[in-house]
Image 1 (cartoon, rainbow, N blue to C red):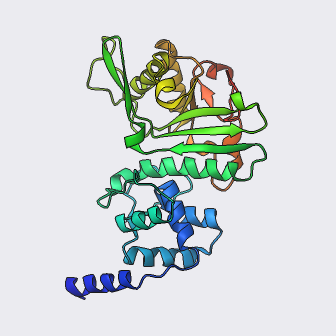
Image 2: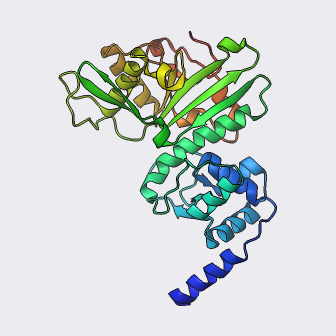
Length: 307
């Protein structure tokens, strides 16, 4: 089939598109979680994986969904096979999702998405999906906010003559309905770290070069100290979940933060093997370490109130 015939086939498919049972749920989940595999969608919907994969291909043929293969030889979340394709909304799919109220006009898609960025995107989606599953039927707690649009989250703070960019991968909050309304919501920024700790900022910071991760952490601390969290989001306080690939990285970072006097309990560290899409409840357990007391083996939960 030549290119002209192929394009004509796609145009005909788009023209005769009719919503099938389950299509709107697929669009809603793609709008909510951004980058997902068929296995992710199967867990979220309990649909047959074969028919789900077939329908995703059809939606892609009709221009509503895009899918890309993962780059070779890169670490992935344990729930993701390197042979999986990653699905996300195309511009036409986003338009339909907005029409149905699954997204708003501030949502953007990238029809020229590079596969090199997918492992990071999948890491964020993996955390978000597991958290949503864990809280889906929780008796007292709910996920009251999830925001990961860069245009909404990007901020900065100036301290000591330096400008710190504050650009988390996500912001989320958990509301515990069993507590008084004035204190029942805990806010978290989320950072999914893949870069090596040896990667340093090109700018001098506090008269020395700092790793990008440490500089991010210092930026969050200054963000709170200058009241920017209250100004931008109405937060009285927040935690920062920092997901790194290995326990060794966690311990190295905790020791480094202690040397930099950044060893409070604002920054919570976790590795991706501590929770699972097949056992989502683990993400609400005591799995998070802090630089303040990691040496004592103390662990925290997303449902912990730490003041």
